[in-house]
Image (tube, rainbow, N blue to C red; front, top):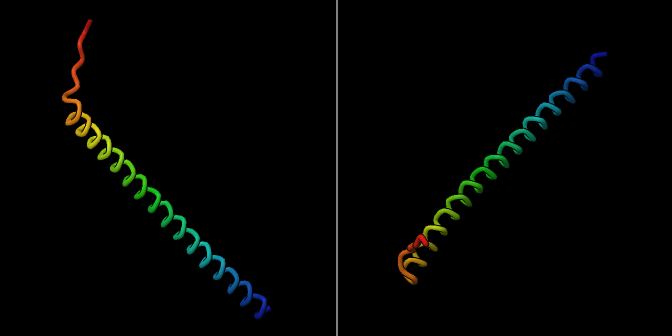
Length: 67
């Protein structure tokens, strides 16, 4: 029984190591996705601001008239 117990213990340790590695990989991917989403949001905000400024420079201030 000693060899079987040792083999089972080794397999359990390998499974735990692989689970921890997988969990760390998933957390890394989640963090990267969150970072890219934040960067994209900031890019869109900056782009809109620059487009509004360019529009204002080219066409003048936006004015709305009520009829």
